[in-house]
Length: 372
View 1 (cartoon, rainbow, N blue to C red):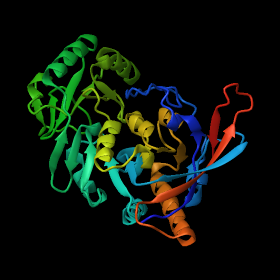
View 2: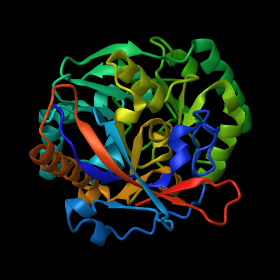
View 3: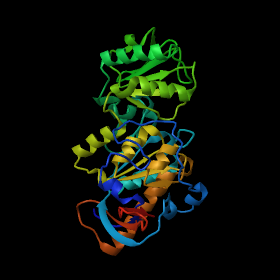
View 4: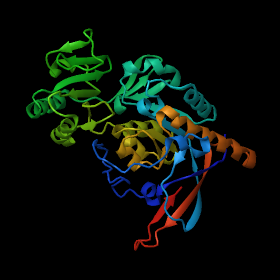
């Protein structure tokens, strides 16, 4: 079903159209994400954002000089879970559940893209939609949530894990490791956090935990600060793997080269004939940055990490204020309004985006900037 709506785009016009190697926050587009950068944020007032679905997003604004209208498709919504779709209590509100269901009823696919391992997805099985799948472990696994089966995996090679572990032990003698694999969680005996239990599969060294191969290696070190730990891990691992940060203090998540949320989502979309320009993506932490860069339109919740707020096209209300739901409600409301005005066909959900382009009069390059 094709319907129409009006919605504003924000931020740099050329950023989605030209891949010049950098995003709006000055991050490299190579797929690596980093924590610890103090960005300016959006300045959005969460209380104001929550007033109505139409005010669901806080926009970055520049002076306007020209206006153009641009039509595009919205065929898929990709969202992170913890800190984004789910509240601080780890639960999905009734409002968010209803919004996801309504979006799917309107013919728009919903995909959950999360750092969670398969074992932590069963309590949200009712959120995965008709396809029943989730992209988890930062893109390492495609998981059939209802069937309890990993359908695809992109794991680290045992030799690479061993080399990286040796180097990290030399740099951080107190470091401890754990793994997430298709069969579950395993840890070195001195790897401890609020989630570990005596019943965990455990071993003396990481190297004993590599069968089956891990989709993600976890690392902690209680002997140094979280900031120093992440800096050292980034430096030691370098380009041999992808190091991610999803919000847990002092936890580094290490995946195989090329394994990110963006890569997994791109494979999903290509297999279904969906272009990145037809994707809305929501996130809150640095491990979401590749996905937010890749998507045609990116949203950060108001509680997001500064790097995310620097990057995204728009900032919506916080996770505890159902920010994702507010945006989806606005999408559906405008679709309904557009249907009444323009009628429908049978090829997809068409979004008529009202895009204000402001030309910077002081710029010698004549670059065009989008405003809300």
